[in-house]
Amino acid sequence: MALLGHARGLILRPNAEWAAIAAEPSSRRAILFEYVLPLVAAGALVTIEYNLVQMKRGPAIGSAVFQIVVYVVNVYLVAWLADLLVKRFGGVKDPLAAFKWVAYASTPMWLAQLGFLIPNAQIADAILCAGLGFSGYLLFLGANADMHVPPGRSVWFTLSVIALYFFFGAAAFAVLLLIAIAGSVPYIGG
Image (cartoon, rainbow, N blue to C red):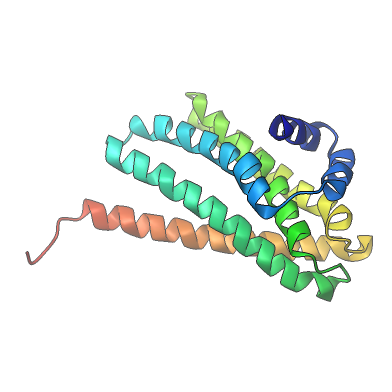
């Protein structure tokens, strides 16, 4: 299965895997349904299990659905913005390559969510942080292979895209927090 092959390759031999991904014919739809959604859904299922301990079923499931939507929208949005920025850093504008780059580089972050199966929250958080860091490293490696950014500029390009990724992730988290707060405060005036 391509999902397991790409995930394993990106973790164990990322340079070779980026070359294979760059050469692979694909479409955004195929990457979304065959790669992104299965990985994001696995993390969402773990989130449901983890949150059921702390919340009622409704908020836990709603949180997982929101998580899936946020990750998918983030991939599309950050890929679109990366494609807009790439020429400023000497790379080649290619919407499909940008989508591949963001989607596949997110693999460790999504796989790290499986760490929440471990009952120890500190260990799970450490695994998630490691996944985030490794996703950033994959973005850096793929900037040259997939986006054709010259090596001297790929660090700045990668940091720019990571900042966008975190900005949109933080904005989504803020929306989720506001929804959670609104749900826990009794309605006044009615």
